[in-house]
Structure formats: structure tokens, C-alpha cells
Image (cartoon, rainbow, N blue to C red; front, side):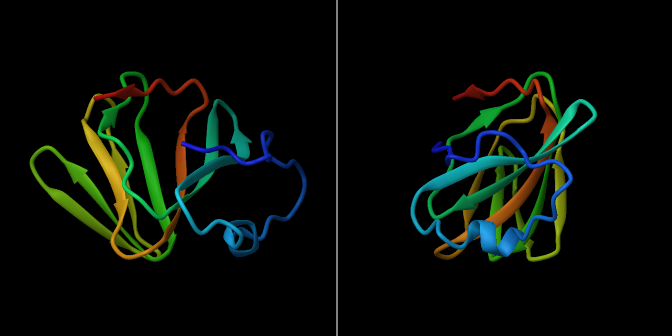
Length: 118
């Protein structure tokens, strides 16, 4: 996963999520937008599949703001379109991938999220 130069979330500033995601057209880019108590809100721009993984210490919520993503679980695949949201409980193996060429998602997770790649 590639991180942009935006390492710290902005505080007390309006953020234009469409503008923030515009320059990323290849790979997977993921960076923080905001801290909310002990959780972090991230933007993820995807043009390729992410690895199978799970989070032993946190649930993870995805909100699609552009395109469509597949959330692959061991037993089924969930398709999420713009404006749809889905929460994956901790310890559930999953991966995300864009349906077409690109997707932009907002993720909500614990700031101490642990990721175990499979």
C-alpha cells in the first residue's frame, strides 16, 4: 500500500474528497483524513486488488464515494456502489478490489488497527 505525502489528517479544515482523490490513477493509495476519538478515517483510492487479510483488533467500515468495489469474504462477495457502506467485523478474512478501473472509498477503523496479511 502506498501512502501519499499527507501523513497527518487535517484538523478544523474542510476537505474536498473528490479533489483529494483526483491525482491518483494507479495502484492503491491510502491516507488519513481525520481522527475521531480513538478511530481514524481514511481515504483509499484503488485501481488494483488489495491482499487478503484480517484485523484481529478492530472492525473496519467501508463507504464508497466513487465507483464500485467488491468486498471478497471467504463465503461470498459483497458489491458496494457509490453511497453504500459495509462493516467487516474483526477477525473476518477479506480483501477489497475495484469493480472497474478505479474506486474511492472512505474507511473507518481503530487508529491502532492491526493488519494480518494472508
